Image 1 (cartoon, rainbow, N blue to C red):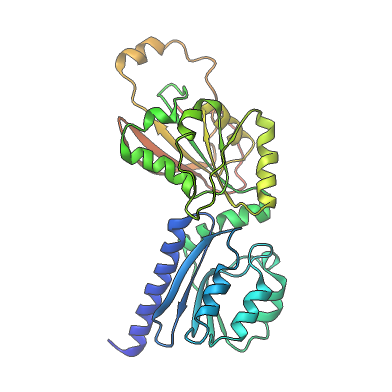
Image 2 (image 1 turned 90 degrees about the vertical axis):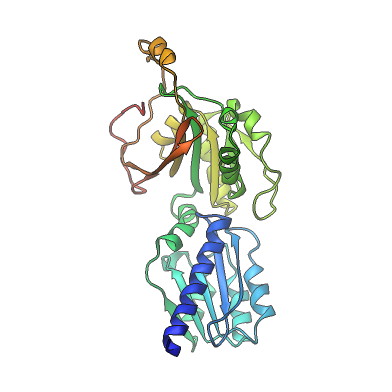
Length: 322
């Protein structure tokens, strides 16, 4: 293998490591980095959730300032989230000659000191080819900047008739319980409806960055948006809502949710026959403008993951989910 090909492969491996490290921490709201030496060998690789541990990258670079020839960043310093001035100071006192950016955000969201500095920096600033993973890592930050709320994942369980079920009842299998807990571990904000109280009381005490998990119960629909706006002001860029079908319908109607994880439980034939003539009064959930991104077996039912096709979806019709 030629030296240039080897360098290309080692850089590609370093980029994959950066993205995977970030994604494992928070797939919609993580900032990751990788420091490389002159041979594109990894010196250090780490990540943090957006809005917390903002000096972690700076400390890492300061520690390896003499060895670091190149930095891979998932995205550039964002105003209010990463202190560009501090990062610039460390960069100018390091051996870094090249910075590679995995996802490019609009300039209006970037740190002002960084914007001015990068125009005159003598090193090489390189924007990498578009990557779906890198784009999704920034989704929570972009949501905070554009819509003044975090990226919201709603987790819900229901039977075939659209009747809400307790998430705790879906946790008989270890894998499902781990999945459900994982959403909280990868978030900096948690909401829940009253019937999910028992499940939420058994969540881990801290998330993946050792921040205390402090769920808020939903008492009033109209308080949800205000709370999401408040969390955005604190740069909490990702939120999970453990909910029922009625609240999910409201979130869809108000465009306050970006991703839905829907556990659909199997119903026996007797139950279906008993309820066949009693469908009135069930919540209406409008998924116009949404798409299913995955469907997998989950206990006796299945797990659907749905995503909005765009942030400007119009909810014009009212089809039921069932």
